[in-house]
Length: 406
Ligand code: FAD
Image (cartoon, rainbow, N blue to C red; front, side, top):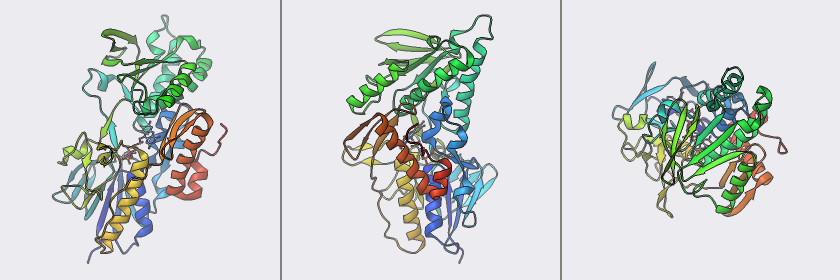
């Protein structure tokens, strides 16, 4: 009898962790494992805002897949998935086709732009190494260009970030550290540069503890970030952003709008016929698709509900990693003939948001609030723990954030 084929789509947190766990729990004669990803590398999405601001080089963020996946046990295919055919148990790639017995979808997230005119065409998003590198270079180009024009344009030095949720706040925190360096490098007075964070909700970091929100806003404002709270973005063009606040329309001259106010699951899942809510597939308790029992969903493409609040869990790396561990365990059981697979139970350890490399806020172990250095150190512990899980001590030493005082 042929070995069953396990195909894993995407090498984000969910996909790569599923592959790494399966390569440990299954032998080469148990199953054929294939991992498909667009790029030859895995990236830590949770560090991309640092790459986009230019405070961390993107090579620190990406990890060669072949450095963590054992290619004698996992067949790595670098290709782009174009569709999934669940009825035929097939996946179509740009350069071929794969058949599966078990499929794991970990294709991650994409920006949701809610139909705001001009946003999709004119705003940047932080969602990959390529997009983060583009933002960094675009900002640097504007600084370099500014003093080379007969009439220097204000729009080059106004950076607008849409959304003061987790990603938006973490990004403006990095910008607040980076801009003074850029001003020095390109001979631009700091007061000519604006970092403006526009948020539609009545508060920054909606859902976070109010004391922590106040701390975060004070820390960022002290470093020159301007907040426009309760402000709805109405339109983005090549050189301006229009928003409405207190029934007044206002414009900001800018050619740098970074949209960090909404994500959805990968649209490929809906295009492939999965019933989904903004790209997130509702799953059974064991993370299998409700429509196809041979398909598991991990990470931002999965929609799971918190029974206590009756609301969906927010998509996070923390949950994606735990889903991967659960799924790898369950697939290994199924392959070994054990049908008693485990439901997924998230074990949330807390949330920490950085405010630049030397400040952060967080809530851990249910209700312990962290500020400043202790939160920054906790963030590094979380990041380092992931690297250790994924690639052991050698990966931690190579890519880890080991300096707790910088
Ligand atoms: P992803 O990490 O998005 O990976 C998907 C993978 O699939 C990628 O490698 C991609 O290249 C690949 N792929 C996509 N489409 C295709 C295709 N068609 N063919 C082949 N390959 C494809 N969460 C936290 O828990 N803590 C944080 O501090 C935190 N900070 C964040 C900061 C930022 C700036 C951002 C953007 C997000 C942050 N998040 C954080 C959220 C977290 O990053 C996501 O929830 C997480 O990345 C989801 O993991 P995933 O495995 O579902 O997908």
